[in-house]
Amino acid sequence: MGEHNVKKLQSDRSRAEFITHLLNDIRALEFMLEHDMIERGITRIGAEQEFCLVTEDWRPAENNLAILEAIGDDHFTTELAKYNLELNLDPHELTTGCFAKVEDELNTLLEKASEVAGEFGSKIILAGILPTIGSRHLAYNYITPNKRYYALNEMLKAVRGGDFQLHLRGVDELSIIHDTVLFEACNTSFQLHLQIDPDDFIQSYNWSQAISGPILAVSTNSPLLLGRELWAETRIALFQQSIDTRNTSYALKDQRPRVSFGKRWATGTVADIFK
Image (cartoon, rainbow, N blue to C red; front, side):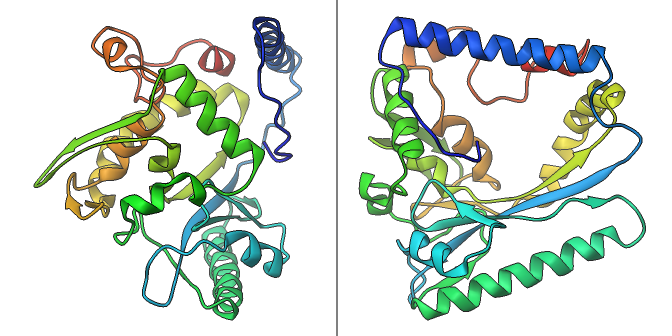
């Protein structure tokens, strides 16, 4: 994921080769689990912060690559849209004072990004969904010019068999069909990572699922999208629908969506989750 090297699948043969590589990755993971090759005995936390770039009048900017180059820090990387960037924090051992270290590092890096963005007439803002995003900011020319993102857009459209459809109902209702994957770029978030022992993978996966409901309930802050007041936390449905590879007829059947909370507790090993 870090190299952004992309080669689109052009034939059934290349697709079969790609699937073979995925299966080999699963076998490699199983081998590492069987031979105790994954670090244990230490717990670390990490985090990534996605943020929006806006103009002086708080509209989505389109200069993420220029700002990223000027920042010149490997903690920062691109995101799907020209008005987004992402920063990745260093891992910290889960010991006394670790959360203060995470906070200090996050604030330092955000301040750095803010100063550089100002040199380009832009500002940074932390918002689950930027309320000023309009339908024109979802156009193809707002995709970050990177082969990886163009390939993602083309492949998801090909698998779906058409354009992206979004239908949300809250206080208002939004129903729209669009030709890019940039619905997904409307979402930004702060994501925490937790390194645990391999033996704890399944148990931790299940308790994280169990607490996700209450955590979401106290964290909702993104009701607005394209000028409509929708869910209290619109990011949930937006993310689920924005990269759903099912077309309408399949969605009405019992085909699992690309993004979901799952239907049962995890069992076995972490390799079973990837399977």
